[in-house]
Amino acid sequence: MTFTSLKFYLFLPVVYLIFHFIPDRWRWLVLVTASYGFYASFNAPYLLAVLLVVTCISYVCGLRIASHKDESSRKHWLQVGVVACVVILALLKYLPFLEAQGNSIFGLSSTFSKTIISIGVSYFTFQAISYLADIYLEIEEPEHHFGYFALYLAFFPKLLQGPIERAGDLLPQLKQTYHFDYDAIRSGMLLFTWGLFKKVVIAERFALYADQVYSNVYNYTGLPLILATYAYAFQIYFDFSAYTDMARGAAQMFGIKLTENFNSPYLATSISEFWRRWHISFSRWILDYIFKPLQMGWRGWGQSGTAMALLVTFFISGVWHGATWGFVIWGVLHGVYLALSTFYKPYQKRLHKWLGIEKSIWLKYWQIFVTFNLVSFAWIFFRAKNLNDA
Image (cartoon, rainbow, N blue to C red; front, side, top):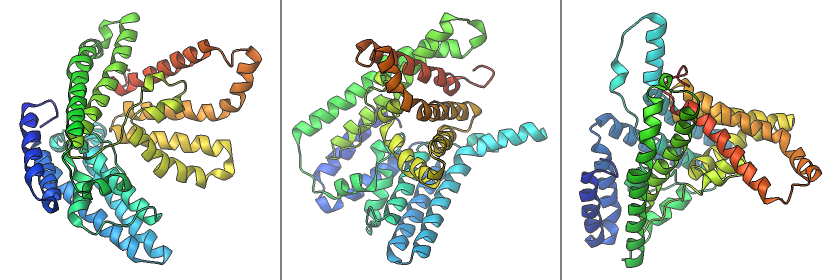
């Protein structure tokens, strides 16, 4: 069941009507049941098992972290929870890739992992990790009510593609008393409809050309390849942002506000600004839980330490997006862009001043053009079927 399926258009109003008329103390149960039912619609029982295991592990480890006062015990339970979540995610998401590499190296023909899908696993796993980290850092208190915690990880509008919500943002909203708000429901339905329009009408029109070219790149040269890459850049933006709009719109009907995930990213004037505008909840996650710890650990290396932290962070970002070399190269390219900018940025303003263009509107347009083309170039590796095609 996806947001564009007829089943979902029957599912959502039924869930809302039950949620609306049931007593407030049971509303969390309605949403938990609906969320697990939504996930069960993908007919992969192991996905439900993984969601439940990650929920139980992070719930218990969160309570353990908070219950201990000594640093070693707190760190121990943090490591237990994070390692368990990462191992589960890695096994589920990267087993097909590892099996394919093994088959290639050893001449095998195993197809066991082809039946495995990992829809949504990355998102609730990342939420679980951020929850544990925030408890360890004493940013948040642990959630004692298992039902609310399960709902925090599984809330169906954001289950499949995010946003990645922080506990401090979402958990209080799940507990608040619900009040019928016509304007909120109306705006939520309009936002959902706008997202549906972006997905079905805009994104899929761009996909027609991008898919035609990228499905057989050897039949094209020059301009068609460039136009197909631009078409894919807009396709992925409208597709991904459409899902966020639909997720936010559906959640708003239940009185819950999810994070706005996109803010005109192709108007960014630098790669760092692009990542402040693109997939915002994910960008904040890798900034807070990967980049900052690495940067602090390598702060003695100065700019080189920051550059290295950016490279490692975006390498991990590429691996997270998928188990192919194309995703890895896409992540490394963005890491290289940002790493180089740490050395160039101190000289940037002086260069613009020396050229007399620091206040020119054309400078901004040029920066948007360059940034968009750097991002689009990286999309080639993200979209191509394999490295030869890229």
